[in-house]
Length: 136
Image 1: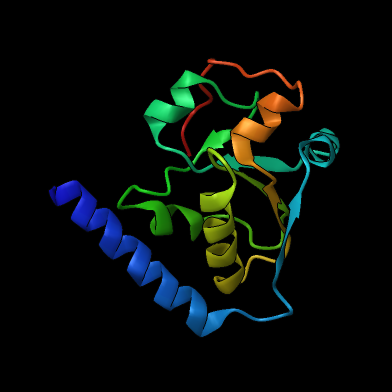
Image 2 (image 1 turned 45 degrees about the vertical axis):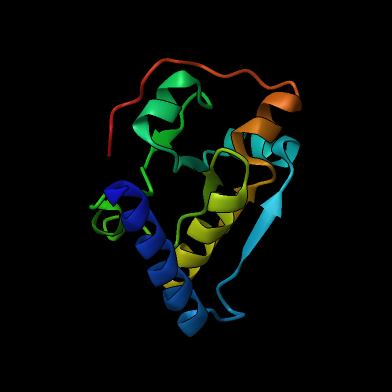
């Protein structure tokens, strides 16, 4: 019960945060998995924002796990280069949209959210791996 209350509070807080700072100059695009795969070939980092447990069940090869539900998520993203493009991957794309909005309000310039998240990635025929990349 405590965890669900904390989750509800975090989403409420994020909703307020997002509504106060969204601007047209910093926006994100939701892209199909095929486009994400092409962008990855150009060296764009995939941020998988699911929990470590979800990540370990299967993730995009080369992606880095930035657990959106962790207490230090905001601290971790502050260390990233805001001019570098990032691809966001969540379970089904919904949390990816929230994270994408958060990142754009924090000043990130090029954010791409994978349409339907890891589910869409798999359904498009792309493989998943269970090999864990080093945490950031």
